Length: 191
Image (cartoon, rainbow, N blue to C red; front, side, top):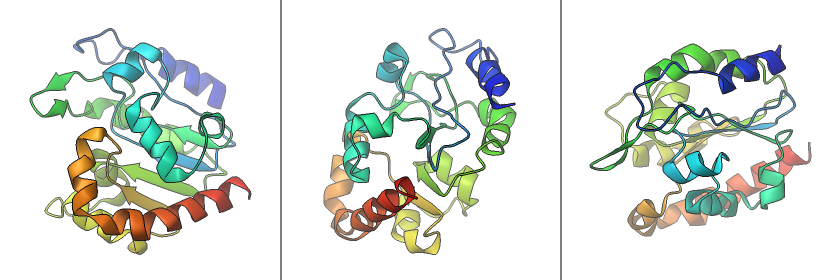
């Protein structure tokens, strides 16, 4: 089932009004132990055809304390964003992921990850879908409450360089959450 499903995802053309031709980008294997659920591929990712192969990915790998080889091992990490294609750019950054993508594919893919142990939800759209949080709570509030979801789900801010100010304003993230996250990732990769 999973090979056929991934083939369907890779050939998806639901979103014809995107600024660039649809190019679904996911990393998936039923053996994956850790899921990275982000927003949608950015422009650099679109052109490289590889998730998080940009400065955000460099930071994310640093947060997880994993090298590129481990990160791109699909038997270890599934990378399934809320939308699989680059949505375009708005005034404040990339546009929101088209909802039809998650509605069509998300649960079907998640149902095919039987060995999943840990889900990392990155940014507002992934947090909303996976945690069903009151939208009045900020991403900061949700990430601060990470222990409420531990050890199966960890909410994270986006690792984009655009969030440098957020990281400086929230030193607890690197001091408290990241050591626990790195330990949890290491445990799940060695499981």
